Length: 165
Image 1 (tube, one colour):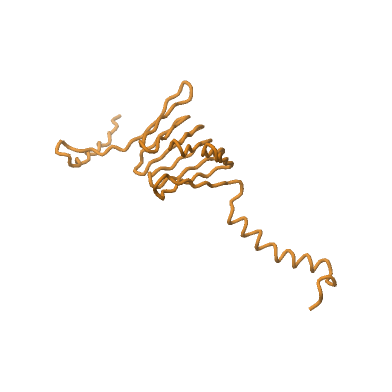
Image 2 (cartoon, helix red, strand yellow):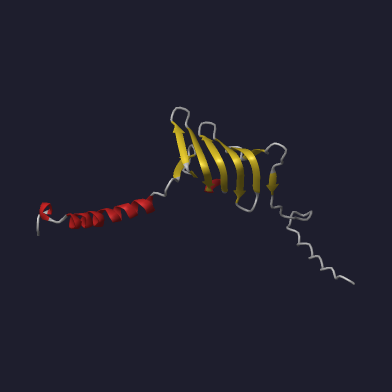
């Protein structure tokens, strides 16, 4: 084998590319471009809260995570998913503040749309505020039941109207 200092420049470049290309490709697949993820643990139990965003900051003194830009939150133990322009996780207060076109979806279909939402983790409570001159929208899946506490049979379907000329 010829020493590398005697190889032509084109061959040295090809070898370098051959060595760097797998590392570059692996880096692109392993770390998505401009998408950061933070996983916070709730106290006492191993229940992850995952936040993805374009930019994230963590203040070690206050223990607050601030996520901005295309925020996505996944909290499987509470069966929640959320999107917003910004979110702040206050680990000491066990609270999450969302702002900017907030949409929160719970497993089972319940959802909230608002401009600002505060989620109080320990209470399992949401406080939602609308944009000026707007309203908060919530959708709740309600299971019908009869007086004995049993699930009621669904109402019959409404027949189609026939138009007469």
